[in-house]
Length: 440
Ligand code: SF4
Image 1 (cartoon, rainbow, N blue to C red):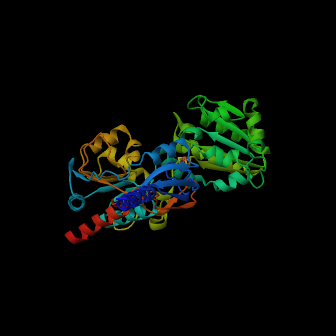
Image 2 (cartoon, rainbow, N blue to C red):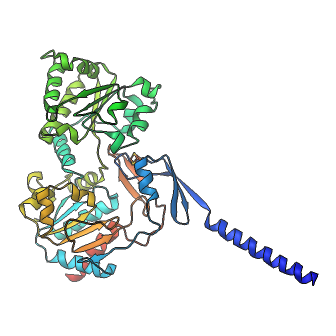
Image 3 (cartoon, rainbow, N blue to C red):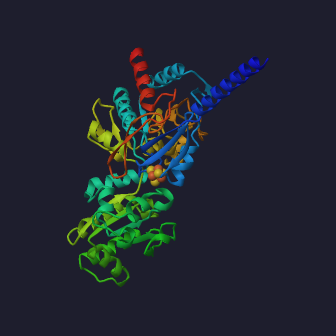
């Protein structure tokens, strides 16, 4: 009796131990260090992600924007591949997308601004095959800024150089505390090689139409009426050239000319109620003129820039490229996605990333209601139009490794942290291309 009781106790103990080790196995948390975040153009690559049971359970170094995004990622993304709103298999969706595109005479490929290099490369390849137009600019302001840079040139620097050298930082028409939450702490607050005191050694100026979260952290806030930015830039240029002595801009002019190293970050707010391209051109000319007196650089505070890079390697042009003649033709006035949609000059669209759709004008968005649209997105969205085919794709930097280009054009490697059965955008586009070649 006593022996059988001992045996039972041993068995119970053994079961309890097995259970305990099973629980421990499930709750083992793996920590991935030096992970990159693609939620904004800073592409911070120093995050630590704690993964438990194929789920991100904690993040270190992340800002609130990244934290809510990463912790909110579902364990397994819902596969919402659809044809005309109804669930469909991946193979059927690929076949339908290929059918639409093979019947199209003027397809447009747009978005892909926040994709990884592989997705962008596949988008260019598909545009070549289809003799389509591809415009992957991150926003209309981003396109205007790119064109301004082409017209007048730009003095730029990596964010690392700004951190190490800049003693004057100007944020013009942008609010990084809200849009790029770690920009200030990583590149302004931190000590640099030649800026040992960090924030204490830098003078920070914010120029905007109204107080912002960033202006509250700045040493100086200069309020300009919406639309007066161009006038202020012109006044500064005159003052830098010594043509006029303007008291109102005298202090800023002196700071810009007498600093050791100035960095101006600008955003869409610089062109409120004025032509974005001319305004950015004027700013870039100001920066060029300042370089006669000191070192000064300008940088758009925007999204990742990989789409510009990949299009430029593969076609020679950064945006608005048309392959209708069998070779790349560049004309931003003619082949801009927004313009083509507004004019009704396309008969099908492939889009990646719903944020690009939000950046289109109202008329261009309305046009999408009348076209067959193939959408690739990270999660199922409620669009204002009815897509013909929808794919849910794996997320680069979470489910797939790759490369993303930071806002300063520095390539940052992305790691795969979680498994996903969903295809990446590159895989979806390659499957469509394969289906097209099977058809022909
Ligand atoms: S600043 Fe941008 S890239 Fe950096 S952690 Fe926040 S959202 Fe991610």
